Each structure stands twice: as C-alpha cells, then as structure tokens.
Image (cartoon, rainbow, N blue to C red):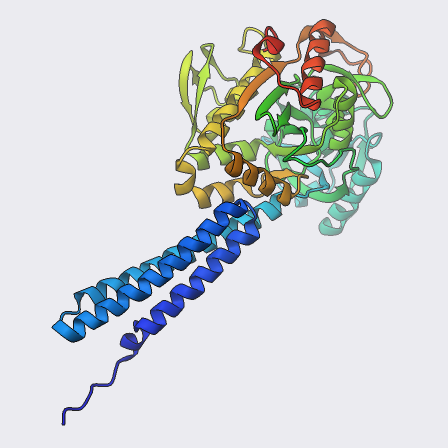
Length: 501
C-alpha cells in the first residue's frame, strides 16, 4: 500500500484552513480599525462589512472548488491561484490596517494641544570666535532682563551648571539695544527669549539668520483656553491658522508671520478665509494698548486669539499652528505645489525667481514665496494674498490621488511641525460628514488692509520707530459683516466679498 507523504512546514502553512484563518483575522482587524477611526458613515461601514464577509465566503468556496477539481482531474493550478489570491487579500487588509492605525495615531499626536514652548537661547554671531558654550569662560554675556526675567535666569543657571563656572552678564535696557551691542561687538554673546526675537532685530532686519545657538533651554507653558468648542458638523466654526517665523519646535512662542481665519459653514459647505497682515495695528486684549498683531504672539497664542476676537468681533473655536519647518516639510511630502502668481519677482530669502503665471514650487521655494513682501507692489497686502494662494494650493494637492502614494511621507512631514487644539474626534466627524454628504465646497477669501506708516507708539517697542498698518475702518466693517453671516449660518455670495479680496 502506498504511503502518504508527510506535509512539509510550508505546505501546512499554506493549507486552506491556515490561509482562510489568516484572512479572517486580517478582516476582523481591518474592520475594527475602520470602526475605531470613525471616519466612515455607518451606512458605508455596513456595506464594507458586507463586502468583507462576502469576500471571505467567496474565497472559501473558490479554494474548495479548486481542491475538488484537483481531486477529480488531477489539476492543481486553480488551487494554487486561489491560495495565492487569499494570501494577497490578507496582505492588503493587513497593510491597510497598519496605515489606518498610523493615521489614527497621527491625529492623536497633532490634536488636543494646549501647551506652548518658551525657548531661551544663548547666541553668538556666525562669524564669532565663540564656537561653543565652553568658549564663554571669561566672556561677558548680554541680557535683557525686563521681559521674562525668571526664564532668562533659569537658562543662565542651567548653562552655568553645564559650564561649571559662573557667567558674567551685562543688562541692556531693551532688546533693541541688546541687538545693537551684539552687532557692534560690545558683547560677543547674548541670551534671548525666542518670543522677543523681533525686538532684537529692531535695527538689524534678518539678524536671526546670522546667529549661532550655543545653548538652548525649552520649557512648557499651558495655553489659557480662550476658545469655545462647538459641534463642527452642525454649527459654523472658526479656526485661527498661524505660521510662526521659526524652524524646529512648532510649539515655540514666537511672532506670527501668517494670520489667517478659516471660517467654516459645514451645513452650507462654505469656507471664508480672512487674512490679517502681521503689521496690522490692533489693541492688545490684555491691556487695550496699541501694538502690531505679530507682537501679540510674544505674549502667547491665547493673547493673539483674544486680540483677534476683539478686533473682528467674532469667536475663535480652534487654532492650527505651523512654522517654517512645517511648511517646507509638508509641501515637499506633497511633491510640491502649483502657485499662480500675479507678479514677476525675486524672493529676498533664497533669491528664487517667481514668474507671473503658474509656478511649480518645492517646500523651500514656497516658503520664500509666502515670506516675501518687499518685492511686491502692495507689500504685506500682496503677501497675505500669497499666503491664501499657498493654502489653497496645499489643500488642492492634499485632496489629489497623489496623497495615497505619499501617505507615509505626508504623515511624517506633518507630525512634529503642525499642531491644533481641535480634538481628533472633531476632525474625524468632519471627514465622516463629508463622505456622507458629498458635494463640493465654495471658498471665498477677504483681506484686511489699510494705510502703512511709521509710529513710535506701539506697546512692545515704545519710542522705537516701527512700520504698522492702520486698518481701513470701512473695509474692516464689511469684513465683520461677512463673518457675521457665516457665524449666523447664512449663505454668503460673491457680492458679499466683492472688493474685499
């Protein structure tokens, strides 16, 4: 009597029962992750469950049919093909589950943020003989202790511990004088709170690009919640989008280069973008004193939001924050963006040539594009419009099929250089609603504008002549009216925003 050959390890591994069991487990895991993600409406989720169950039953029948055919005719090609197909389905389900899990983790990491980072750095000029902290021995370090004394002292104490000796300091009355002292060579090293970098550059625009950090201390500070949560699927909401002028830690307290309000009406499928130039004169919420909007961020993002709420008579519900690193990383991960520029110009940073018409820009080029104002006919007003152009281009690219092929790269690029206080469940609910309702969105954009002039009366830089923009009251009131319509859940039309772009 012929003896049956014992099945080998791989034959057992690829047996019908094992392969179907793997597919069953992968199917359950896949459906569980889809359910946890909460982005798929219930009716579509039930359809998906039906498809996955049907797929499992069909594979079971297909494999059984192949085995019967092999026994009857001695041909096993169908068995091999059906087992291979079962394995491929399991791999696809497993890989998709991993991607969903990454996406869910990513949302958790960038949302629900209520902390800012105060960064204190010890700087020397790039061409200085001071190359490291050890070179500080015997040197006098310039400080400005009027603002953030405790943070400055804490950083100096930690630097002294690392250096193993006391650091001699010289106090300057203002950050402007501290910057002058460094540039003039009166001191070779200074201690700076990153939040007040703009004050350091009062007489030396772009000074930050000529500095080398020798030592840095970062401390976390809680953001006072001045915003109001809402039901983002049923009620209008406003997101304050800010771009800070730093690289590295996105939570750093620093001046704002980008100030956009994204007013969303989920019911009417309308989005209104409101751009506020960084140099706009506003009254600070904390004391009612006049200052530039960008300066308000030196006192924390909560102060900026409260000031904007007073300025435009609205309620901000959420904020979203990125920085120079974030913009370049995200755009590069998207594979670049296409920008339609109304002007020919060369950027001051990077010296990139921007042509009138369509431009394919990588991350650094796009960053320099939205930072530029001096080469533009209307200065900061045109820069605000360019910021809106970039945001629209990024949204368009992010919604394209290419996001699927660059999924991992995009998640890695965004995480760590973008944050928001919006809950991940709110974002999921919005996606869920969009999938359920479908339909396109109408996008409108308006911009605050006015007359620029020099003044010595800002709260943050009293006595120093700085450029500010006095907002046009008539235009401002019209913008407030449009925002009020969005907040009242009324539809806005092109005539509402005519002449406000």
